[in-house]
Length: 386
Image (cartoon, rainbow, N blue to C red; front, side, top):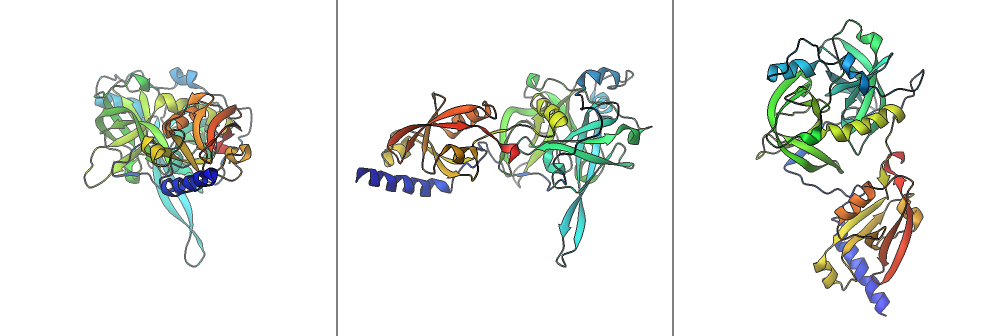
């Protein structure tokens, strides 16, 4: 009879918490106003290029970076040093009209030349800029358009790589961006944002780092970002946030929009972006640790109210064919441990999952039906392989 009552309690908790489910990404952050990113798309998630495997060539930056006659000692110098590595991106997104005819509507964004080899130039941008695009074009001068090929994207990190043949850029001035150490940035450091806002062509705006190590939630994904008051508008996405030395320390991704908010833009730190871009360049995708569960917090108040054995996070949903389903996890399971590490909040579990590896065998400690302690073995899945 007690077991039945506990089962009823668990069902009640799920009903209460389900509406507040954190979801697959365990998204923890804040929304100030509305975080805006443009709508977008891609045709092929990965296209194999001909020839030898692509080499990641950051070491070649010395040979094709900032011109020697540019002195980076002021904002003008920063713009001169960085703008030659920033491109405008224009896309065509397929839609179907009411007569069931396929049409295309335009979109725009920005990108950063971050690597090259003998045949191709590789451009970093935001995944949301290109992930729904049927055609992608880049421009160095906002006039001459070159069609680009989608290499790969990471939805969770909001990063993507496209390429263009070097031959198509013959006679054009450009260089590979020099990246700086984003971890060295402090609130108050001066920065310059360079991109293609509103598809109007390359524009530079000046500001400071407002905050470091921020978390924002955009379209269900949580991003660790630098916050800046440099103007970042639609179309700036994928462009460069540069320090006063002319080094790219962030990839612009979003801004907060509200009647009450002004000057809150966000950029993905370069130190986080470079590792992901390298994987995208080499593999066309990035492994992303993933269990496939939706969660809600069980705090001390909920624990007392429903006479639960511990605080933790309750599973409010299990995704079909996910690692969690294959391991036998169920809706209503209360997660309290991860590889013998105590789990008290959803952020604890999110951190533990993010620090694991795809294919790794982990052990979750749970309570089932509010009373039965169990250890469940789970093989960590890959969110980007779904």
